[in-house]
Length: 50
Image (cartoon, rainbow, N blue to C red):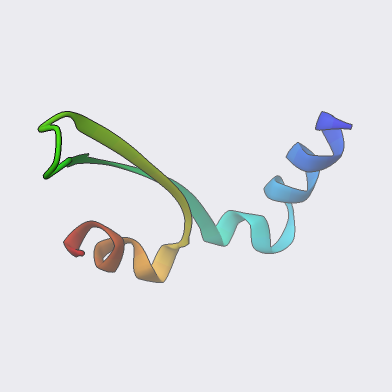
């Protein structure tokens, strides 16, 4: 089953997306939280500027 997912990401529109991971500091505890999201390649800068 994992091979199907990998195969669909490598062909077609799967190449147009990137997994972005951003480290954000929590206001309540002061600890760092990692936010992960699949973002279209055209919107990567928008994700990191938020």
